[in-house]
Length: 298
Image 1 (tube, rainbow, N blue to C red):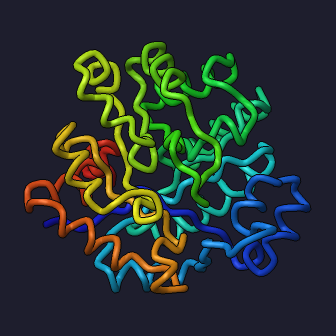
Image 2: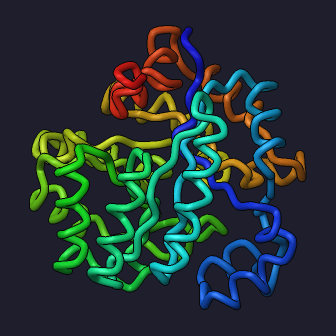
């Protein structure tokens, strides 16, 4: 099997995770701060600098990772994170890929920042969450972001939450009808619907829905926190293996009862255990390699 690719991780420099509450509060990022350092309960957020990330990748046999942006509330924070990603990719071009964060509600400032990030070498857009960022799929500003993605031929990653989810991963559900309108309005856009699409793959048993979502991929990030392990087998038996992307949500602590250190090992092992060899080639890297056209890059 070719090298494993992780389609969904999040990374921050040490100055952020040294005091995430102070950093997030100073930038008005209340949603991010509440997620990584909740006022009540235990945080499931792990932290890793780039050397630890690369060491963990090596140990688990991960060839490349996609660093996703957060769904920031301010475009200025998006620009800061895009700068981190560009620097890290320049240092480790054979190991790291980055998607550009963007805050559509900030209008032209957001569009300009997004274009700069893509010009600098980032390979997609997201992770997005309309409910946290204060926009809707019907907004003109969001439409412009999708248009930029189509012009650049890059995918958009969107955080999707199951309506039945009440976990740490997100407390904002995403109504299915919003996604139906999204893919109907932009049938040629490429979307990655994170966290197994919040259950959307099961609606693809309806032929009309499957046709509408034909350009949508589903990543597996944080699945141990949300689903029974059988989710891999069930989704692939429902839609096939060609649009499923392995992702971990590293350094999130997805097995908090067993470990307080982030790693890739167990999620990779659990995924491989549920897949045939042919499915492994696609889900564990081949689908993402094709979507991002990695084999065509220098």
